Length: 375
Picture 1 (cartoon, one colour):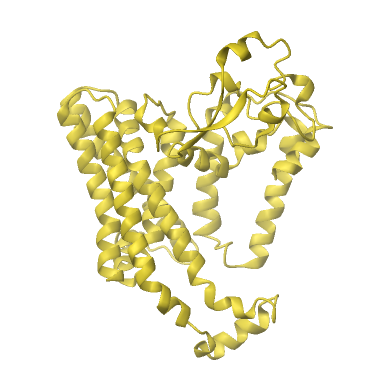
Picture 2 (cartoon, rainbow, N blue to C red):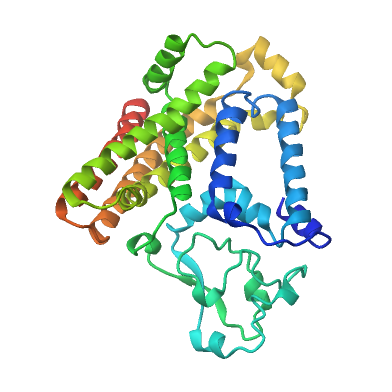
C-alpha cells in the first residue's frame, strides 16, 4: 500500500494532512472498525470473498489518500500497522539517529527534508515528516532508510541503544495512542487466552452473558463480544487503576493512564510475539499440501472428511520448546515492565506500587494460562 499511495501521490493534489488525520484518531477508529466489524462481526479473515473485498477497500483508500494528500499519508495517518509497530519500536535496541547534530545544523541543502526530494524513487526526503536531528523516540520512524540515502553528508545511521530506551524517558502519549493501545492490549489477551479452551471459556464468560442479556443473535453477537473484550473491559481495567493512581498522587487522568500503558507495553508486545509464534507453528502441518494443492480447496475438503490426514507430529515435537519460549517471553516482558516502572518518574511510591499491581495482574492472566496449558 505504501507503494500505491506513493505512486498516486506523484500525480495527486499533495494537500497537507489536516488536524484530524494528524491527531491519530483516524488510525484508532480504523483499527477498531477492522477489529470489531471486520474480524469479529464479518469474519473477513475466514471468508476469502470478504477478505478480497477488504483488500480492495484498502487499495481504494490508499489510492484516494495518494491522490489527495502529500507523501505517504495513508501509511502515516490512516493505516494502523505503522502505528502499532511505532509503539512496539519503543522497545527496540536500535534507533535511527544522526551522528553529529552540528553537521545537520550547518547543512545548507537539508536533503532529508527537502521538498525537491519528496517523490524520488530512492533517496527521498522523510515521508513521515520527521527531521532526523529532532527525532526523540522511535514511534514515528519506520526505518525506511530514505533519509540515510538522501543525506549527502553520510550523517544518518542506525545506532545501538539500551533495550526499550524510549520507555525510560518522559514519553508522552496522545489520547488517540492511549485508546489504540487499549484496543491492542484487549486484543492480545483474547488472542492468547483463547488458544486454550479452558481460558477461552473464562474470557468469553462476560461477552456471552452480555449477549444473552441483550438477546443478540447472528453476526451481532460477534460485534457485542468485540466491544466488550476490546473496549469495555480494557477501559474498566485502565480507568480503575488510573483512578487509584489519581487518588494517591493527584495526577491527571492522561498522565496516570499513560504511565500504565507504558508499563504494560512490554508484556503486551511479548505476548503478541507469542501469539505470532503459536499461529505460525500451528500452520506447519499444512505445509505438505502447499505445492500439491496451492488453491487449498481439495485439501480443505479432504481434511473436513478425514481430519486424521493432518500430520501433527511436528507440533508434538515443538510443543515443549514453545512452552519454554512462552514462559521466557512472558517473564522477559514482566521484568522489563517492572524496570520501566522503577526508572520512570512517578509522583510517589504509592503511584508506582499501583502501576506494579496493574502489570502483575495483566501479566498473571498470560502466565497462569501458559503454565496451566503448556505444562
